[in-house]
Image: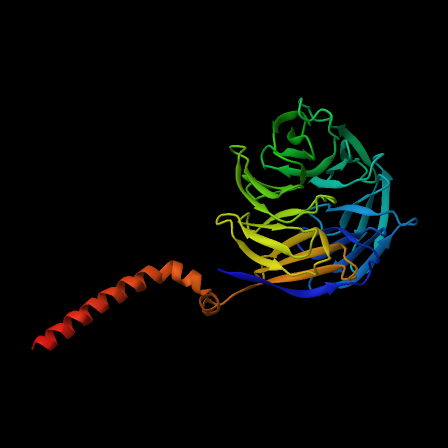
Length: 370
């Protein structure tokens, strides 16, 4: 099956600043977008109608989003001033509450259970658990700083992503820009193991079976690692501005078979992890900086949707939505370039032509002698 991704909607209302984060709700009912101007927009995903615009006084930037699964109602927002805000939504109304959590901007969030989530802010990683009365969140753990080596002990400590992997014995995965990947027991919060990662880590994404992880390498592109062997499987490069390095987002999609990567210079690309070839490009304006991506698969309708958020670019397009469509077999065959056809069939054609030429020559010679 060959897919192409068509732009189906441009969500330009609601936000007046760049998009910092995107998140589909667990079942895909809503899409949430966060902006530098301090607004959170809630969109109904079946028609991408804007339902709510939430903002706090002061215009504090919202940097991270996570839905409190498994429900479709509660959205966790991490703010630049260290606060964490909970937005409870339905199609008619919205309620807001929150608390101060960190002395640094809250750039990472992950939900570990319906009553448990983890937040990351610069050097701090904290675990929060809902109280028995369900009205307050209490700090359950404060994770230690990562171990250092002679190569990185002078480098800045900065959390760049949080994930919970595994089912029977869940692990919390914390990545740091300069200090690799670290795994913690998600019940005792004890450190289990460390995985060294080459380069500076900007973001990570795991396959559904947690056996592979995609790493956004700030300097050179995207790398895919095996969690079993802790070795690199493949890499995908993209252009970066060395004078303005960014933490580019990455997402493994289609059951981990494809990699979707953000971009600081226009188009967003999708690569096949197995063949390592580029499958498709989501075309953006060259000046657009895409540092927020999200995707959701709707099993009932067999529909795959991607959302890209534009942080900078001057186009005021906000969020762009893309739907996957399957190309017909005829289109795939006719759209192949001549070199591709030749590489597959060219030698067969050449051999058949030589044989036919020899047969024709022998037949003509025999006829002439007769």
